[in-house]
Image 1 (cartoon, rainbow, N blue to C red):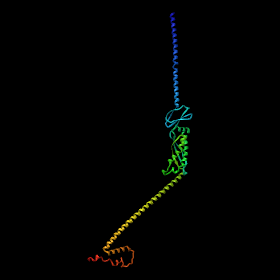
Image 2 (image 1 turned 120 degrees about the horizontal axis):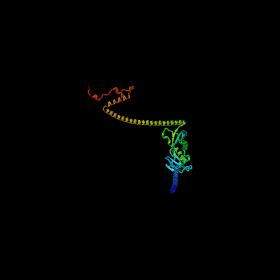
Image 3 (image 1 turned 90 degrees about the horizontal axis):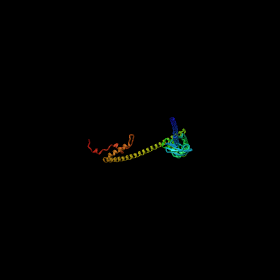
Image 4 (image 1 turned 60 degrees about the vertical axis):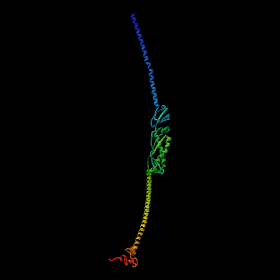
Length: 347
């Protein structure tokens, strides 16, 4: 009886102990599931907040590239301009918006324009412009406001300006200043500079566009102008030919005059020399005559008479003279007897 009671009591106690242990185990299991749930939730919430912050930060971050400006607009109105390449911040959309503006160089052609020159002739000109948005905040904002950051719209405005400038500039130049066979007379660089000065300030003040260069891309002549140009060139050539012909004649006259002057000088010198020689010959002849006369006066008279006859009588001369008159007496009387011959021994 006592053993069975003891057994039952022990079993009861054991059952109670098991029940207590089971209850305790159930309570412990409850603490194991409900305790770590809060840290996981907060960890996930923190990650989500960080992600949202990073996304918001990236939406507020803007990169400025080289060769462009970044305009920050607030509700559509430009508030600041970023020019230095790199990263910059702005308020999130829709509070602020970043708009990139291209600052690189662009070219625009005017197309063919029929314009009139100062001398009333028509020419066809096509000009080109090299331009860019000026790299400073004031002009970048001006470009945004004027053409809404549309380069094509800016190019259209430039074509309008250059068309008007071509008309007014060409009217101040003659055709010969633009088309000429003499390169030294062409004023094309002055024409291009005048075009630049006509529109550069207007483009900068109105659109924030800096005009880097203006040049003539093409220049042609209509048929009427071409004919007039050919006639003008022909007249210029004829004028040049006339001038050169006159210059040649003038030089020929100078050469001829110089030759005649030299010939007169040479002839005068020759005459002087001849006179000198003749005078010397006469002196020598007189000396010889004097010596001959001193040696034999009668022989001298005979020789002089013969010289006179030689100079007076020609093959066709007919003379009727006294034979006893000199110098013809010698023909009748013959040569006088020489003293040397009379005194000398006979053979």
